[in-house]
Length: 56
Image (cartoon, helix red, strand yellow):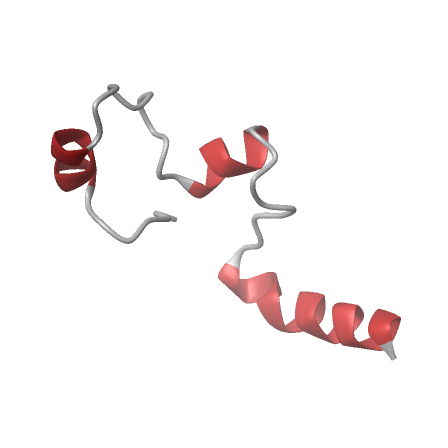
């Protein structure tokens, strides 16, 4: 999945430093501690249910 408000070309033009390759992917964000999990769409319902049960 892609994460970001602007596309990679726009971000690269606006930023003064060149961003690392793949910096807008969910896997890159997971590896660098920016997100806690990358969940496949088919597993999303179960993950939400588990989180809500844990919080209740």
